[in-house]
Length: 151
Image (cartoon, rainbow, N blue to C red):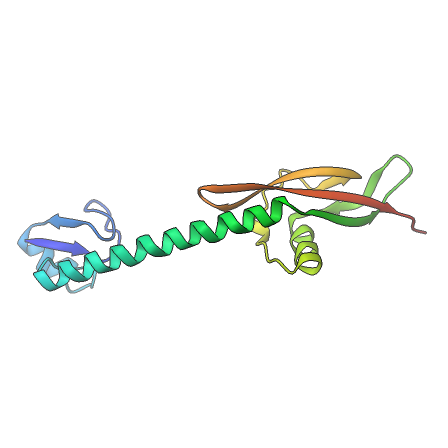
């Protein structure tokens, strides 16, 4: 029997695949658990429509990520931090702080998980940080750490 998988099924296939499975496996396991539907004409048309919508959504996400990447690359984020005489910061600047500062300064939201900071920033100066906005879009954020005098 031919079925359209509604979710990933280990050993059978991925979501959206059209697979030929044993009659008993399809009727007694896949269909009752809503893991698949029979590959009828109506279901095939709805699958094609769903795949078309998914492709459009992915294309839109890529375009949005590319536009956001260009905005991010054009800006320099300045963060003030207290430091000792040797230029080492008291504490460190993390991806969470960078995300919050970017939102507060430019009103652009960047998820802290997308900022790929190998280790927190501990020195004053300019730092270039890769930001992975989309699997196909990675941009560079420039952060300038400015030392402020503190007591």
